Length: 164
Image (spheres, rainbow, N blue to C red):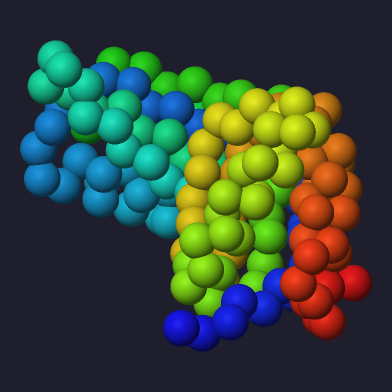
C-alpha cells in the first residue's frame, strides 16, 4: 500500500452550482449538455448525475461563478431541444479540497476528512474523491472555515511534510 502524501488544502468561493432537472434518460443527453458548454468556452467540475424514480435524470456540476449567467443562457436556449425540465444556478457555494497523492490508498484519509467537516459543523452538498484530491461543495459562508479546519486536522497525526 502506498503512503498518502498531503500537499495542502485549498478553497474557492468563486464557483456556482448548476442544476439541470428532469433530463431524459437516453444516451447522449449528458454529452449534449457538456458539448453546449464547451462550445461556449465553459469548463465544469464535480459533475453528478442522479437517476430519478420517474425515469428522468438530474444533473449537477460546478462552474466558475463568472460563467454562471452564460451557462444559464446557453442551457435555457437548449432546454427544449435537449428535453430537460429546468436549469438553475446557485452562486452561494464554495469548493474545499484536500490535495495530495495516494489519498485513496488509506481509508483513514477520507474518514478524517469528513469527520473534520462534521466537527466544524460544515454541511456537505456535493463530493468528489480521486487519488489526488478529495473535494466538497458547501455553502460559500462555510468554505473558509472548512478549509481552516481541514488544514488543522491534517497537520496533526502522521507527518505530512509538504502541507504548508
